Image 1 (tube, one colour):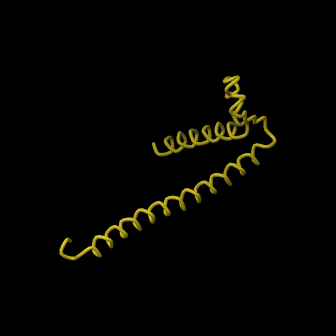
Image 2 (cartoon, helix red, strand yellow; image 1 turned 120 degrees about the horizontal axis):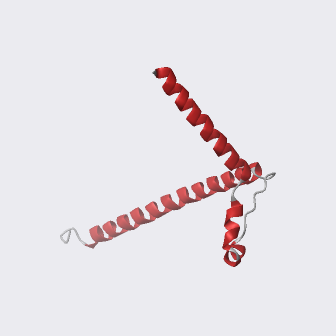
Image 3 (cartoon, rainbow, N blue to C red; image 1 turned 120 degrees about the vertical axis):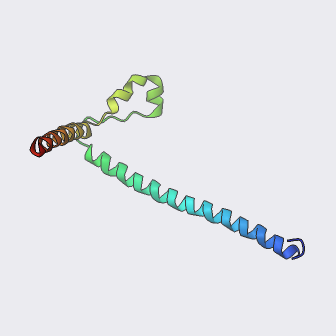
Length: 100
């Protein structure tokens, strides 16, 4: 490398700098895309839970009264999860009985 001259070392430094900037730009682009996707999912979830007794306390309220965290359980989502669990478990049991 020393025989090639300073241009070679400058080229290596610029190449490594571009690699670093390219990787960070790549990560920032994907991070912003994932953040936008999660924001839209949060909006859809809150729209789904708008008629239930969903209460989302802010940080100041949680610091004042940590027991408020139990009230952040979404009603519809919990009900659907419970019913889906029953359906899946029942389906598995029926399929096991049929295969015997």
